[in-house]
Length: 61
Image (cartoon, rainbow, N blue to C red; front, side, top):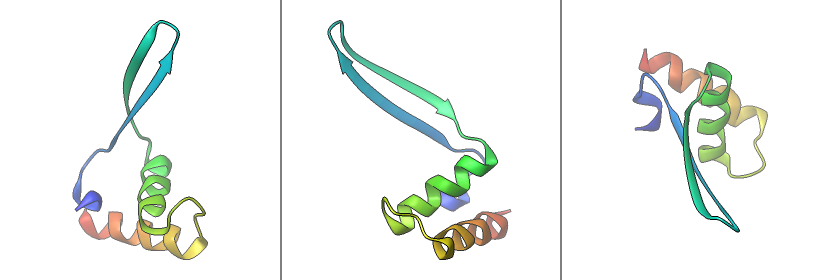
């Protein structure tokens, strides 16, 4: 499902002395590959998951 999107957003949250803060940003093409590979492989991203992520995004059109 994640590979089917035409754009991907990253949502983050940080907590500091002034309270919590949320941020949303659009990922670049390389960041899209890396994020999808992370979802497939976990924290330690391998070359196979990067290649699979590239193929999944390419096949999604």
